[in-house]
Every structure is written in structure tokens, then in C-alpha cells.
Length: 325
Ligand code: DGY
Image (tube, rainbow, N blue to C red; front, side, top):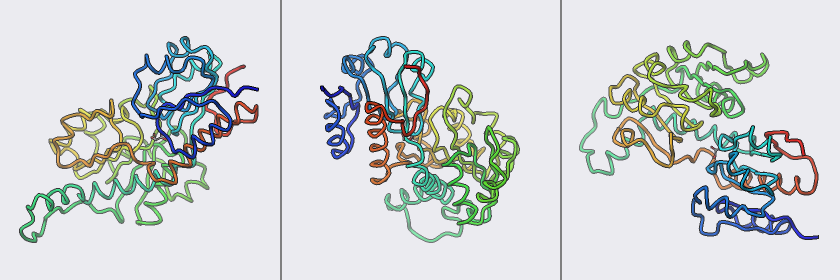
């Protein structure tokens, strides 16, 4: 029996490609170029499956042009690159990679919070530029982490990991806002108290965004929300570009209406709003919150295992829709 054909749209670990090759005829993006939608469609011709990385839009136009496609396995927990309704209507299965990255991403959220509040990047640039001539009482004096109030918007598995780190590791008072409340047992475990979004923004010393990107979460933080925040506050976005209005944020940072921001994701990334690039009080990283070798390998393996399970007719590990086949 011939093997199904699949497309792996970006470079991934060679050992995962080797595993896939045992089950499939694999075309992979050996050059690791970001294919334009037209080229992606062309390469998907005749493919029954695809392994994507979150940067490729799977929409109605692509699905109409690729009628043989049956499953797209995203190597990402976020799947806002999927038009899920169009995929379900076209009978195309989608999968993602939850859980395997939660703790690693929470680690990074905390690292970015600390780098931002304690002005680590800014002070390192100062030192490397040879500007450090003497000690000064207020040199790079930042905001307190321990004992401060941490506000988390989006309280899924990653948000809960950030909460536990803050509450148990740093003695922070944790408040959160989410579409639904955690169970009392989970609230107790995370030592987190549910509050309204406005209360969170008005009272938190540090705000961390960990919610999924949807039409409803677009610009969750814009000029009105930034205006509610304390002038000493830190904002951290490890969720998705588009959840923050980057232009409004740059203006708030420039005018010191909030103290600082740490951003791992951007509207229209990999482009970054030029106003953000010019500001000293923002730490910028290139979407690396889940980037440890172990976690990225686990993500690639989970995406591959979803493809294998699908074509073997076994239950999917982490489906995100239920098309009727
Ligand atoms: C995810 O898994 O959604 C991360 O943002 C990596 O893309």
C-alpha cells in the first residue's frame, strides 16, 4: 500500500522527519523559506496532510485549492492561523500542541517579566556601550517583583503556571481575569483571585497576557486599557500579536503612562512596530517563549504523532475541531 503524502512546511528536527518518513512520503521545506500562500498551495497539491508551525494561514481559499488535504497538524498550541470553520466545513482535521509547552512558556513569561521590571536588557546595553562610569543610587532602579501584585489575563495552563511561579516562588499576590473562573481547588492551588478586567488593570503592578488570539481578544489591551494601568506598571505579552495594540502601547511607553513592557509577540510579526524598536523601556524577543530544545522537540513529535494517528485511524491526541468525514 502506498504511503500518504504530506508536506512539512518549515524545517523541523531531523529525527522527527525520519519518523514521519516511516509512515509518509514527505516533502519538507529543506531550505526553510517562508513560502508565499501561492507557493504553499502549489506544494500542497496531492498532499493529504501538512505539518504547519503557526505562521501559515489555512483558510477557505487554500482549502478549495487543495481538495486532497485531510489534516493540518500545527506545531503550536495557538491555532489562530486556522480558519477553523472553513476547515470543519471542508472536512479537514486540525490539531495543535497543548500541554507539552505550558511550563516552558510560563518560565519564559516569568523571565520576560523579570527582565522588564528589573530593566535587565536596558542596563546590559548601557554596560556594553561603555557608558558605566560609576555607581549611582537610582541607576536602573526598577519595580519590585516579590510581594507585588501580579495580574494575569487568560488563565489556561500557561497562565496557571505563571500564577504558581508568582505566588509560590515570589510571594506575589495573584489576581486573574479569564472567560471562565477556575474551580475553587485550582484557585487555591494557584493562590489566585478572580477579578474584573478593569480591577486587574487598575491595581496590578505587573500584567501578563496569556490568552488565545480570537476576533474577540483583538486589542484586549489598547489605549483605554493602558490608561487604566498604574504609571509604574509592567505589561508582558507572551500570548499573540494583535492582543495588544502595539502602536497605542508604544505611545504609552514613550509618554511613561506605564513604566515598561516585555513583548515576545507582535502585530504583523516578524515585523515589529518601529516605534517600539526606538524605546528603551521595552524588552523585545522574537516569539521564543516555548523555545527550549526539549519543548520544541516535544511539540514537533506531538504534531507528527497526530498525523500518524490520523492516517492509522486511531484517536487523535490533540484535535481542535470535529469535522464530519
Ligand atoms: C504556540 O505554541 O502557540 C507558540 O506561540 C509557538 O508558536
